[in-house]
Length: 201
Image (tube, rainbow, N blue to C red; front, side, top):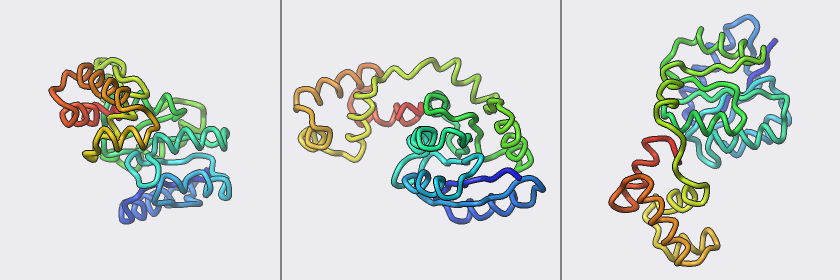
C-alpha cells in the first residue's frame, strides 16, 4: 500500500482528492494538512511514501515545504500538484527536490498513475508545462532579488523591507532596481506582478 500525505489549503479540494485517491486499491491517504508549515511535523509522524503538495498554502508555500521535507525525510517522494502551471514554478519545484509536477485539471486516474511512477523512481512532469519551461528559460532573478520583491509585494516601504531582511536601505534599493530591470518592468509593482506570472517568486 502506498502511503500518501496530502497538503492542500482548500478543504473541499483536499477532501475530494483524499476520497478519490482512497478508492484506488493500492493507495491510502494517511495524513492531511492545510498549511505548508505542517508538512514536515505531520510527515515525521505519519511516515508517508509520497507527499502531494499544493504550491500556494499559508505558513510555507509548497516549494519551500518540499525542500524542507526532502531534508527531514529523504525517503519521502514529493509530487507538486497545483492550479498554477507556471514555468518558473516547475523549475523551482525540481530544484527543491520534487519528483513530479502536475496541474490539478487532469483526471484522478492520471494522478494515481503519476504517484505510482514517482514511487518507481520516475520523474513525472506535465508535458505542456515542461515545454513551456524550456522555452521560457531560467529565472533571471537572484535569490536576494526574489526575497526583496516578495517582501515588496504587499506594498511595504524600503524601510520596512530593510528591517525585515536585515539589509541597508541602499542595498534594498539596488536589489529592487536590478529586479525591475531584469523583469523589463517600469516599477516594483509591475516587476512583482511579472515575477509572479512567470512563477519566479
